[in-house]
Amino acid sequence: MGLGWFGENMDSNPLLAKRIGLDTVAKLEAAASRRFEEAESLRQNGRLTGAVYLYGYVAEVCLVAAYFRLIGYRPSTEITRDQRNKALSEARQLKLLGFAQVM
Image (cartoon, rainbow, N blue to C red; front, side, top):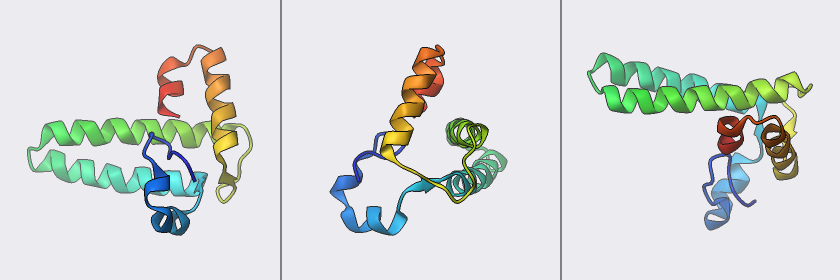
């Protein structure tokens, strides 16, 4: 499986990696929605540092999902490591350095 979107090593837990499977636009959007709800809960409870961290994560995941939608991926199309790496390369060529680091 290799690395996840944010550099976590999926090889260290092959059962979890198999269960989770490859990312899709729909999975990325669902994850962003869940993390946004968690960020809102943290903000409402005065846990601002944690909320800001999760809001940033949400923004990054939304950018990744938006990129793949923009290039024509359907919500259920799996995103392979090679496809992610190609997107990273293209982002670097466009000088989208922050976005490239996300991927």
